[in-house]
Image (cartoon, rainbow, N blue to C red; front, side):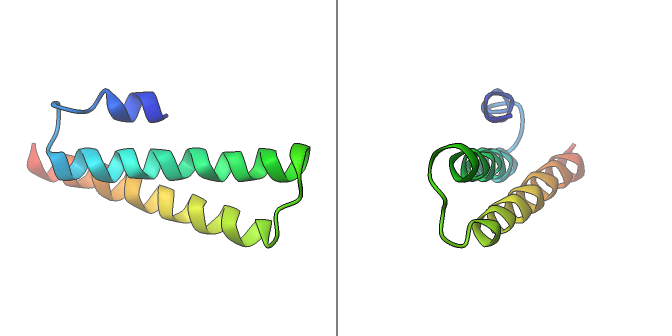
Length: 72
């Protein structure tokens, strides 16, 4: 996901790029929280941090793609 977002650089507006890239990084962070919490060490308030990063990631990705669509 992050690599796909990086490949958008130069193919869309900078605002759209940064929104989708930031969302992809947050999505990766959310997945990392899940893995760390399950397999390494329990994270305090893990469910909260997982859902916050996941929802923010989805919002940024969708808004970035919609911005790209409006600009083309």
